[in-house]
Image (cartoon, rainbow, N blue to C red; front, side, top):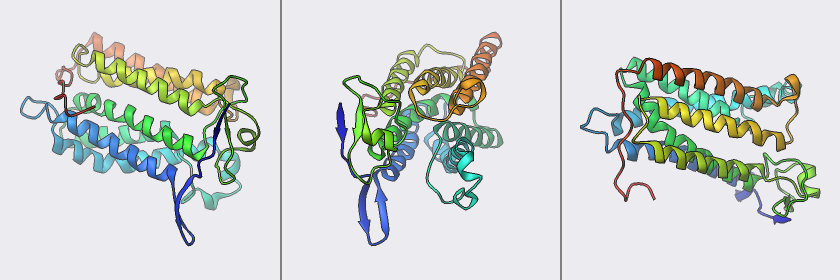
Length: 275
């Protein structure tokens, strides 16, 4: 097994704590903005989305993602929050699907108001989203949250630091590192998207491929997580995964039946933009 003894608190000054999870979430947000900003540089002057548009969208999408992430987490843990309503606002805990959907819906609404191509915006943003998820899950590893069921596999993890955010099971026996599984899947999805970036049309299709692939992976990885089950024995994240997957595939089919007028995919950035 793999022992993880990292203290989730990176720095403390009196009663104020700076946790690794918060640091990684902040870096994830920065990644989600920076990657599309770099990719948009090659679009400027060619009719594509611009860097200024990326930054303007981010101002609205980030708060929307935070609200969505918190909302999904509260719903997913309603048995606790129904008895502790004061913890709903200001407490810890985020849901990745809420962040994706909340940020996306907010960005789409803003793009339509400002007459920005939704398809081009979504395609560029997809690269930032999937890499932001990778960074955010590193925070989960350091924090000890989002672990899986017990396992005897050699890569099972056990949390040994007394301040860990891991549950009692993960502190006593090796469990599946489901956060690491998701990181690997996200990197595979990113590689798939990158290999298809010049060939996928119309605009918006690349984003739908991203959200479909991520949802499919999350559905199966969730079988190994310790979340409570709900409808038909599925976890909330699995139900959301199926709903998002169904909508995304249906939308993708519709796009190919009737291509959007702003067809096209993002251009390849210079080699020093993304390493």
